[in-house]
Length: 252
Image 1 (cartoon, rainbow, N blue to C red):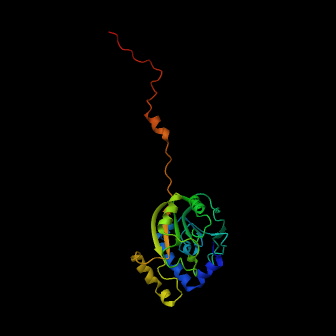
Image 2 (cartoon, helix red, strand yellow):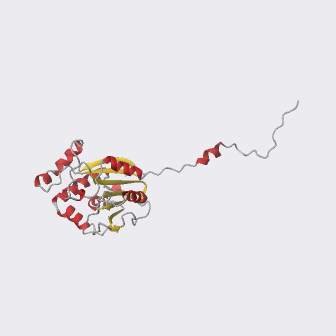
Image 3 (cartoon, rainbow, N blue to C red):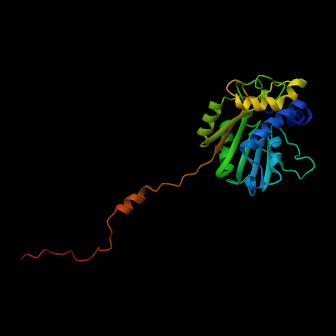
């Protein structure tokens, strides 16, 4: 169900509609996760699927940026003109150490996965405690999901409720949600030129306009292990006087 990496590259980097979609989604991602040195310094940022269009703002200040691309999709060098950070990966066996990721972005990864449950488990594995993931998926109620002329028309679209439920089953804690792509998936000049206006208006009246993608930010929370025997040990009487002679009452 994965698209070919060349088709994704051609859409996002060689068509006006793809560049407009890239900008709309990336702006919303950066609004959620600012890319300044005080926000992202020292952190490892990873993208999976075809998330590299969203990773560029983090190249300058993140400690490490990695773009994972599934084997069924194929891989391309990225970013252009810079040292490559793009890696070919099995869908549910990523070449990353457990707990090494601070921020994780999935786009064109979850909805096209052959095993979304195991993919979510792999996301959980690589995230460190307190780490955050952002799932970007086609909106089932939007105009982009039914259109097969864009990458958002492939795979399984989601409602926000379905995405939230799947993330909770994987053990994640939902934090925030957002949306993007309020323009129709059209190559007509009017829609492309007015795209920024539609994005601003859509964010204000999202109840009336259905976005092309929904985003869910989740966190990985690890609770301190409970030690059920501790309370019993605390409540046990002190044994410091064990072995001493018990006082005997004076018979007089």
